[in-house]
Image (cartoon, rainbow, N blue to C red; front, side, top):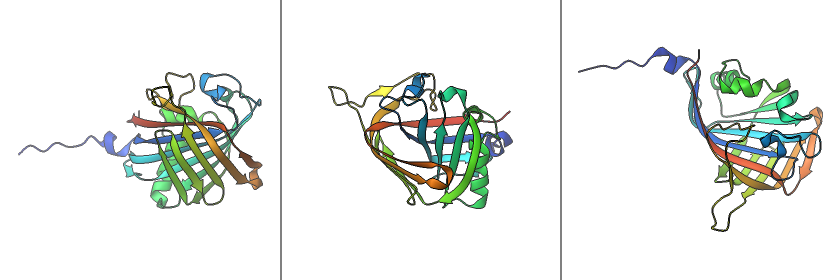
Length: 215
């Protein structure tokens, strides 16, 4: 019998994640930020949610969990200086919460560190009930009275979902994004100046996979 051992870096370093991304914001469709242009109003109020269907961070299983950033982006998305409130799925254990925050705040390096580099200030980290149900550009995101979003995709003449590929600001490299419209988005975090309620604005969803084994 031959026994194959797993390399330590595969189980204790980096992150291997598969799931679904949702992004809704205050821009009209399509959000100019995704192609590197300035947001429609000169700023972008945004919600970015990562639902993890399968994955490990530093060897810690985080499958089935969701992490959400509610963002105030003051100008062009690539200039950074985002102000963010982070919500972590309340079902996460302390170990899972620490692992998710290590990955998504950039402590472990890799592509998520590049994204985290755009954040100028994390205002607060909260654990809360999160419901993320998005498939093929349609669905809902809710966070315990703080965030309520719903969306539906645009479709071509053949009924297929309209997608965006190879954009300059893609949080899902190599994966096409489903172009959608947010029927409704309501954000209620007044203690951090994050309160808005909008209809008919930008929404984007994509399936994603990141395999970063650490350095």
